[in-house]
Amino acid sequence: MQQIGIVGFRGYSGAELLRILPRHPSVTPYLMEHREDGAHTFAIRRTHQPACIPCTPEAVQQHQLAVVFLATAADVSMELAPAMLAAGARVIDLSGAFRLRTPENYTTWYKEPHTQQALLVEAVYGLPEFCRSAIATARLIANPGCYPTAANLAIRPLVEAGVIDRSAGVICDAKSGVSGAGRKPSLKTSFCEVTENFSAYSILKHRHVPEVLQISGLEEREFSFTAQLLPLDRGILETIYFRTAVSSAEDLLAIYENRYAAEPFIRLYHAGQVPDLRAVARTNFCDIGVTFDPKTGRAVVVSAIDNLVKGAAGQAVQNMNLMLGYPETEALL
Image 1 (cartoon, rainbow, N blue to C red):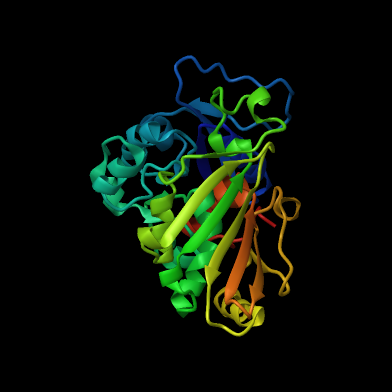
Image 2: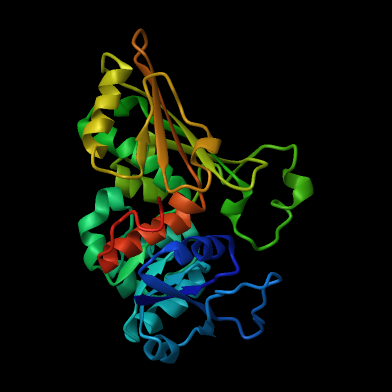
């Protein structure tokens, strides 16, 4: 048994980790309290509630934590990650703190300076389908954002195969449930603002755009991304439009099938069939469907994930399994 810690267990992603990890047969989770005023209570009595310990290097060493999950805001992750690493734990960060490769890029998109530039350079981007070998040996994993996970899994195989007409651009119309905004209250995500409503936000400046660019291989001028808020608690569905010179939807599906043949969490749909959010809810799957019009060369790919699982906690557990040498699907199927 390996001991692991969860920081930020009160947030949506942290709570999802707490839902998944007790099913894992080879790890024992600890809840790590990083707030001075954080009185740890649960309304429901649980027989096997994970122990709560301080979020300190001393606690990491005392409990011999192999991995610490940081389900925290980016500034908190930058503050905590160096101490957790120095204490001997490996870190999986679920924030955007370490996803971008340069401090300049981080400042451009997050509008704040990066305070741990050496760790930013060291961090490995944790998209297992494309970064698996580097993840296994990394000390610090930058768990991908939810929107980029769905986008990159759909786009990168096609960019690698050279079948997208990049001069015509790629449009990604992305929709997410409200939990993607985190648990911190705000007017925009309050019930009366969200219910019976549908809205776009961060147009042309969404901070997840550079993640898509650095993994997909597209240039910023080739990629148009718009995020939209659904009146749902969870789920991401992205409709991706582009032009291509292939002959059929089956040609595009063959590219995906070749790239993802050994991937346990990618599900492909028959030509002309596309996923919906119900299909992926509370799973670690990314479902992909393709529709194609041979007369015009227009293709539409629909990519769906659960933003709290494959888009956050589930992918983080997938990364932990790779880091600790467990079967990649452990606790996720």
